[in-house]
Length: 183
Length: 183
Image 1 (cartoon, chains in turn blue, orange):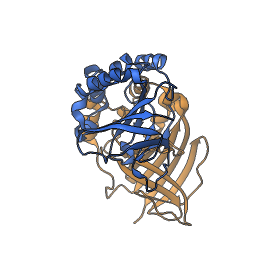
Image 2: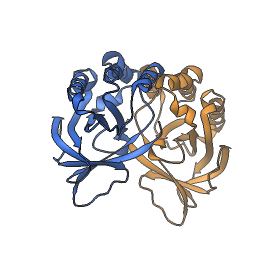
Image 3: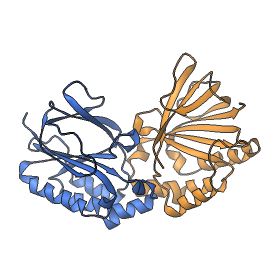
């Protein structure tokens, strides 16, 4: 996975319409009506309320068997029928980041089945992880999901399953934006 | 480990004098006579030939037992008698970054004993890893070492041992700068 930087700009312009914005835990993110996602740097301007920056990178937890399973089942972003999306920015607490690699891996997968849960919803729910903690951003990760309108209930199940895990006890800030595309 | 950004600026100013600069593999880095290391952003200016940026971050491979061993033995940077230093920028190839986490871990530690080798030289050879691949920098890692003049032979042994590992077969660009401080 090559490193590509993106910027998610919330405001009143952008090709994605915010249909719902919800604070799950921690400090809220200012409410916006539209969102754009572009290769960084993002355009700023009076119509932009906030910009969240992140980058795609190499996998940090997935083992070979998991990576092969993911790659054999996942489809790309931008599918014609995937007119629904979600952006879920999260920040984990200091206790998470102080853990060793084997401790984080055990919570992430052996206890929480993070990859296994995501796999159940492939290829319907496409997903792209963006890292941002190392940029000094207010969140650690921005996860972007795309799916067809008919798969909204599956997406609801997916996020509910993840939030019910041991891993999520380390999440200290989380916001969810549900989006639709009409272009 | 909290995220802190640093900039290493090579040129003809800075508190570290370059006593030797060597290209190990790949494209050379322009020769400089002095180096400064500062919290980013670095000062630029006519005396600066290049700036390499990186950040400290959470551990990516070390397991709990290794992390505990490292922490019980390591000393900080800036020790009064540690007037020698080295900066080793490296870039790994695309094959490395395409590996899954368990594959990289197996090469890094079970095959190459990366952490075990470093431990042998603690506390004499202090070490700080800076990540930079995710910033789109020309290198993936900048490793900074500090040691007393009497420990130069130990440092030579350490880098020779690392370069003789399976992990190092993935290194496609590497430069070594040996430095001394006289302030």
